Image (tube, rainbow, N blue to C red; front, side, top):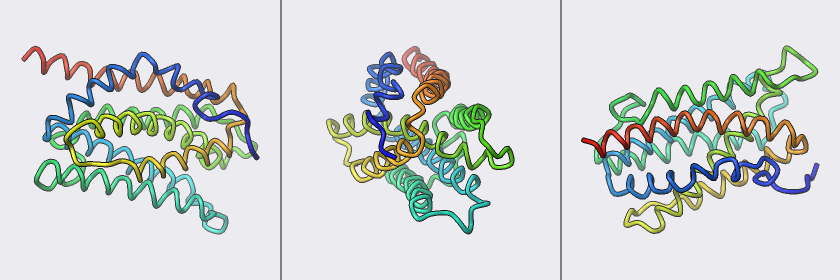
Length: 223
């Protein structure tokens, strides 16, 4: 089904996050000049991409006979994005960053809490025809909201990197994430009111995660 509009306009994502854009861009502009901290940030992105790929796998476990090629490709690409950020983080750090632990992952616990609450909160809000299959029915909604946030972050990140001296391009990754966003919007985007409700919910959760970044920035500046 083809929907009028686009996911950004329909969800109101950019307007809802206008207050965060300038400070987040400033944070990234400063971050990319600090290789060790930049590496921890990328390892956090790797963690979130890994959690995203795992979410797809778990939610689709009961669809072995019906899983389509697009969903399998989505799963593979999210796992590859986790690998991409892990590899780039290790290149930036100059050494291995085994796993995702507090010592090598920026705001690991708040990031995991953000993702967990987002997944659980959206899943709870989805009401489908088959109560035993709600995890699968929530999948496109969870994915759509996650893709909106991922694309919001990565587009800003890409612009900052492009203006910096750091040799790192997100162009290919962004193309895949934009494709995922369009696919998820095509699946469920006609329900505008529900999409905006979920976007409000995610924006509030992101605000709490972003406050952790701001607190650490304030501490670093005061030190």
